[in-house]
Image 1 (spheres, one colour):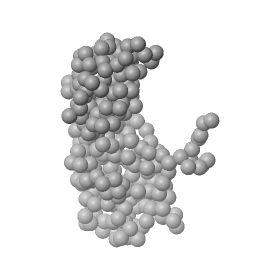
Image 2: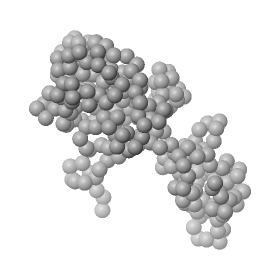
Image 3: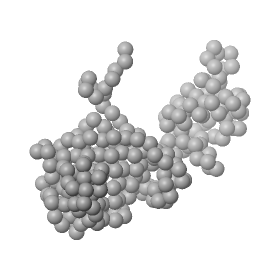
Length: 255
């Protein structure tokens, strides 16, 4: 059990501001805590550290902004939950493969799977006509039993005959590779921030207008065959994107 009182005792005579001392001591304690550990309330931090409410609030606010703490209205402040961490700038990798590599327990629930007209955006991404049918597969992805992402995949019909009759609860990339010989080799992924509408909030178990990360990914095989156009809406409190900064093409490095 964490001894918050002794670990948060500050030195008022130090030249370093109290809020900075408290923030850094909190940071050190957080490293030793399990994910989703509730930290002491503001009033308790004030007593343990001998600081004002404004100082305690500022230290907590900095760590919330950094993603180390999560404030839950009406509940308290918690150490950040284990997050889904996709790697950008690497080969296209699916949710199931990523989570298995991280030792996490992924699960999938199919929301709907059907044929539908491509529409303008999907048509451009897949290289088909706007009125051509494409395969639409919407799935809820869960991480250790917690809903973390709604994934809407759009696939060209011709390369994937009969896919709607397949088991769609596993890795879609594995299915495409083993059943249809389609291996995503390259692609493009864009990332933005959106607010959850009623449907997404219900599926992801978050409040209306909660912050979500929205990504759109297009992939193709080595020979240039379009494989997918997939839109993902992920919970902001459960998702962190990691970028490998290893060359001049994908990194801007300061001096």
